[in-house]
Amino acid sequence: MKLAVFDFDSTLMDGETINLLADANGSAEKVSQITKEAMAGKLEFYHSLQKRVETLKGMPLEKVYEVCNHFNYNPGAQELITGLKKRNYKVIVFSGGFDEGVSAGQKVLGYDMYFSNTLHHKNGILTGEVGGEMMFAYSKGRMLEKLQSLLNATYETTIVIGDGANDISMFKYASKKVAFCAKPILREAANIVIDEKNLMLVEKYLD
Image 1: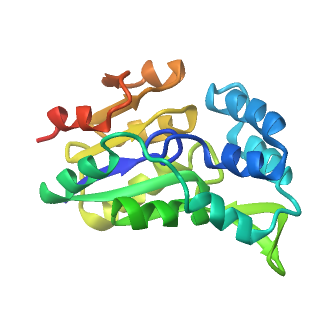
Image 2 (image 1 turned 120 degrees about the horizontal axis):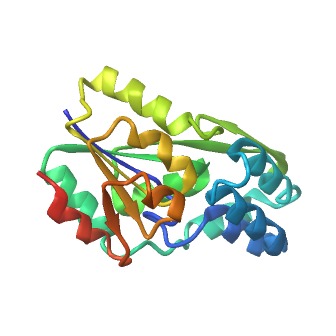
């Protein structure tokens, strides 16, 4: 089994879901600063995620879906995923973002499965709380290890693509570690670095 695992925000999707939601909710400036610190590895991911989601308290769930259904995706995202599937890769997305966004992305881009977090809501209004499978800096690596065991995939048959500090934990389990328009902390851990915003540049590194 061959696995291709993508980060979502700023890798497949052109932007950060939490920033776009905060912009629609009027809390963009505060969230943007927290996000920068987290992605640069200066703030522990779990606490930064909680802090950012707290700023969305009171936002209507309907507005969340509206934002997520109008995402822009990075050039080459759909074409690369199509090409990977033709090469018999299972294409998975691990996101520290949210089901609402990643499920919208799946409909557009066609990846096989995703693992992400859930924005809690009550009566159609966000409570400012979050939970899920990607809450910690180590979550992506741990989930990848489990998937490799389940699907009989190996280090040699796995490629991972990401842009930020919370993608580092995946790199341990993949022979091809792609830093895509990435923060310095991830570039240092990668063995493939792509600085042009075109995901199809990944294709030449495939089997």
